[in-house]
Amino acid sequence: MTTQSGAVGDKAAHSETLQFIGGLLLIMALGLNLRPLLASASPLMEDIRMATGLGYGVLAWLTTLPFLCMGAVALASGRLQRLLGESRGIMLSLAAIGAACALRQVSGTGMTLLSTALLGGAGIALIQALVPGLVKRRFGARMPLVMGLYSASLMSGGGLSAWISPRLAELGGWQLGVGIWWVPAVITLVGWFLIFRRRAAPPASVAAIEGVRPWRLKRAWLLALYFGVINAGYSSVVTWLPVYYQELGWSAVAGGQLLAWMTIFQVLAALTMPALAQRQKNADRRWLLAASLTAQLVGYLGFIFMPQSLALLWNAIGGFGLGASFSLGLILALDHLPDARAAGRLAAFMQGFGFMLNAMSPWISGTLREMTGSFISAWALLAVGIAAMLVVTLRFNPKRYARVMQGQAGY
Figure 1 (cartoon, one colour):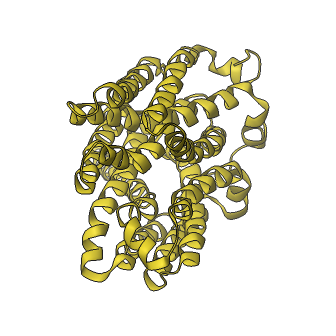
Figure 2 (figure 1 turned 180 degrees about the vertical axis):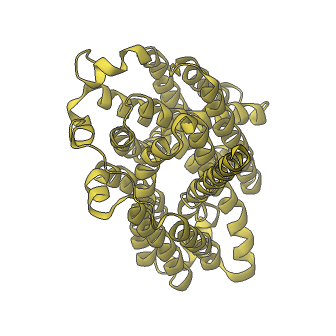
C-alpha cells in the first residue's frame, strides 16, 4: 500500500512539474509575440518610407498607436475579460497579432500599416493586461520569477525581431521582414488552445473584483504615474538612441548595434532582478527598485556628459535599469492585493495610464530635439523624472498596502 501511494504521489508530482513547465513556456511564448509588431519595422523605416511615401511624422504612429492601444485596452480589460474570458481573450489577441502581421506581409500600403498597428496593438494590449493576474493565480509564490521570465521574453522578442527583420528583408523585401511574425503568433495560439482550452479560470468573488475600483484609490493613480515615468525611457531610447549617436558621427549600423547591446542588458535585468525578488522573505521591493532607477539615472547622465568615450558602459547600465524597471513595476502592483483577479485589475489600470505616458515620451523627446537642436534636453528630462521617482519609491512599504488599498492611508 505504501509503495502504491508513493507511486501515485510521484506521478502527481511529475504531472504537476510538467504542467508548470508547459505553462511557463506558454507565458514566455506570449511575451515573445508582444514586441515584433513594433520592433521589426524600426530598422526598415527608410525602406518603408520609400515604398509608401509616408513621412517621418506619420511613420512615428506605427509605434505610437500600439502604445496608445496598450493604454486604452488595459483600462477596459476588466470588461473585456468578463465578456471574453481569460483564455479566449488571449487566443483572440494572438489571432489579432497574427492577422496584423500577415496583412503587412501581403499588403504594403500606408493604410494597411496604420490599421494593423491598431489591430495588433489591441491584441498586444489585452495580453499584457491579462498576463499579470494569470501569472499570480497560476504560479502563486513563484510569481516574481515567472514575471521576470515573461518580461525577459518580451524584450527578447523585440531584440530578435529588430535583428532578424532586416536580414529577411534582404531576401524577400521589407514586407517579409515586418510580416513574417504571424508564424510565431499562430504557433503560440495553437499551443495555448491545446493546453488551456479546457482550463477556465476559477470564478472570483464579486467582492474581490467589484470591491477594488482602482480609479477611486490614490495609490492606484500613484502606481500608474510611477510605472509610466520609470518606463518612459524605453520608448524614447528605442526611437531616438540610434539617431542620437548618428548625430555624434556614428553610422546607422553602429547605432543599431548599440541598441542591440542595450537589449542584452535589459533581458539580463528582467531575469536577475525578479529572481532576487523571488528570494525575498517579504514583499518589500524598494531597494531593488531604487537600484534599477539609479542604473537608469547613471545611463542618462552618461548620455549627457560622456556619450562617446564610454558609450557601451552607459548603454549597458541604462539598459539594465530599463529592463529591471518594467518587470519590478508589474510585481509591485501585484504585491498590493492578495486576490489574483483584483491584483490583475490593479496592474491593468496601472499599465493603462502608464503606457499612455510611454506613448507620449518619444514625441516629447523629438519635440525637445527640434526646439533645442540636441537630444541632451530629452535625456535630462528623463533623468529628472527618474530622480523624482526615486523619492516616490520610499512610499512602497508593504506593511501599508492593506490600508492604502482600502483608501485609509492616502497614497
